[in-house]
Every structure is written in C-alpha cells, then in structure tokens.
Length: 420
Ligand SMILES: *[C@@H]1O[C@H](CO)[C@@H](O)[C@H](O)[C@H]1NC(C)=O
Ligand SMILES: *[C@@H]1O[C@H](CO)[C@@H](O)[C@H](O)[C@H]1NC(C)=O
Image (tube, rainbow, N blue to C red; front, side):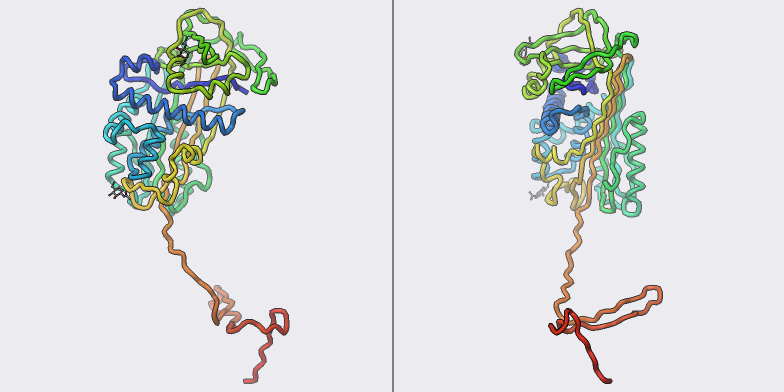
C-alpha cells in the first residue's frame, strides 16, 4: 500500500553522533571509515534494487546493515574464490582483511553505544556447535572485532531446541518485534554454526504529529488504484526539504529527538514515479538526495503504517555474485572444514506513527557441514536370500531365496515343488 516511500533505514550513526548524512561523513569521518560506509551504502542499494526488481509492486522493509554485519562475519572465515566473491558483493575490494576488521569494530561499537534521546541497540552472536567443528581462532577473531557473544549449541542431538532458543534470543534483542527468524526445519544435525545480528531502534520525532490531525485520506497506488488510509499531518517549520528535478522527486528529513538519527522520505513527483527513481539509485544520487535538503516551512502528510518483511537471501546473494558460499565448493576453511552456508534469513519490522518510529531487524546465516557420506551401492543383481523378520520375536517369519527370474509361465509366479 505504501508504494511511494523509500524509507532509508535510519539505523546508522557516526562516531561523532551526527545524523548519518553523507556530507557529514565525508568531512568528519576518517577516510578509511568513509570507505566502509561507502561499502554499506553500495551494498544497500544493490540489495534494495534487486529485491524490488523481483517484487516491483510490494512493500518492503529491511536492514542491509544487519545483513552486511552477518555476511562480513562469514567473510572473515572465507578463503580463495568464495572470499573473492563475497568481497565483490559486499563491496569490500578496497579494504584488506585487517582494515575490514578494524572498521567493523568501530561500526559495531558505535551502534552498540546507542544514541542519546532514542533507543538504539545491536547485538551479534555466534552459535557454534559444541563439537568444535568451528575453529577457535575464527571464534575469537569474530568475538573480538564484532563484539559477538558466543553460545555453543548441540545441534546433533537437539537441532529443534537450538532453533527455538536462537529465535528466543532474537526476540529478546528486538523487543519482541522479530519472532521466528529461523523457520522450522532450517537447522538439523549437520548444522555447524548460526551467525546472528539483531538491531533495534525506537525514537520519537523531534516534533511529534498530533493524533487528532490524523485523518483518512486518499493514497494512489502504483497501478493508479486509490485507497483511503490513515494520514498523519503537520506543518514543519525549518524542515529539511529538497527538490531534485533530474531525479524527479522531493526529499524530506524527519529528525528524531536528539537529531542524531532521522527518517528520510524520498517522494517521486508523480504517482507512478517510484520505479523510475529506483532505477536511478546510485551511490552518487543517494548522496545528492540526502545532502540536498535545506530549511523551509513544509506541510507534511505521511501515512501511519506498519510493515513487516521476511526474506531468504540465498537467491539474491547468489544472483549478485556470492555463489560459492552456498555451494558444495564453498571455501570457509578459515572457519572450519567442509562447511557451506545453507541460507541467510532476514526479517524486519517498522511501525511509523504520530509519536515516532519503532524498527527492528535480524539476520541469521546457517553454516552447515557438507554431508560427506559415501554413497553406498546395493544392487541385487545376482542370487540372494531374503526374510521377513519380526523384530519383536527376533525370528524370521518367512525366508526365501532368489536365484533366477521367475519363469514366464505365470505372471511373476513360480511354483517350486520338491520332494525332500
Ligand atoms: C585456498 O587458500 C589457502 C589459504 O588461504 C591456500 O593454502 C590454498 O592453497 C588455497 N586453495 C586454492 C584452491 O586456491
Ligand atoms: C539532483 O541529482 C543530481 C544527480 O545526483 C545531482 O547531480 C544534482 O546536483 C541534484 N540537484 C539538486 C538540486 O540537488
């Protein structure tokens, strides 16, 4: 229903407690930190474009930052071609492995520190198998640089119990907004590790909408159908507002209390302008939209809405070039032997109302052991003995032998009659 909104997920702040505005990033962040934020912005746009091109008319809400953190934790354990593909999809080409760890540490620490006046939290956790399939070196590297807690699980005897426990942890980290992240059957006795990130945000608008001003109003969908929805409205003085002719859209920044985070709404000039706008979303264009806002008095109407999105990312990530990670020839030798990733699950939730916004997301990657069972042969193509065995009585109730195909005399029937 909310077809014209691009909600740029307001979940990232810089060390200097500035709103995540790219202009301030370039002036205030160290150049290397800027490189990581470029990586995340680039990855965000790739994922956004790919997912929307697959489902052009549906709502969407997600946290590519959360995906990025989980995938980078996997990247640490990847080698050779698997690593190259992950590096390319995560846009990490310009950073060596040490730099990636350093920047991720800063990124995660900043998020974990939260922000004044709003609630912002994130948590990473590794759930390795108790059987030590996952190398200690990998676990200590990731726990240090991603501030990840470790909780060992026995997937061999109780995969379902582990799944329920991981889902409960995610629920706890997201104020119960993300439930059942791992669907039934996603873990089994071959599971080696689950890598999880959860992120939660709740902030009040710096200036709230008045509930009495929320009225039913017409919303025009991409296919021109009209619907009546709850529309919040208010006059904003000194609102950060921008127009861009070449991208045919208007931009409005709605700050949360403390002004360190904001929602940025990009509204195409025409009812059906979103698809064209999305096609033009590049890092440069995003930057000029986010930074091209200036103070003005604006009458704002914004839908009051809640959205939930659930994604399985294996297909998207494979299509973007991260193929080997999910295949038998995955090389995760920095993490352990004979491992691959079976699926990356992502869920996100947002509630936008007069007071502010509540948003949560979680990502979980499931690392599996390759089943290296030999395929055994049993070809009954020569004479054999057979029984019908009763396990309770521990005796065969019937026994026979098969030494040649039954004669063609009767249909599959051959009488044996011997006098002993
Ligand atoms: C993969 O990487 C490891 C070390 O990172 C190296 O020893 C090995 O030779 C590489 N294998 C291939 C097939 O390139
Ligand atoms: C509009 O976007 C284009 C493309 O990113 C940019 O070059 C231009 O400066 C923007 N115009 C305004 C007024 O912000």
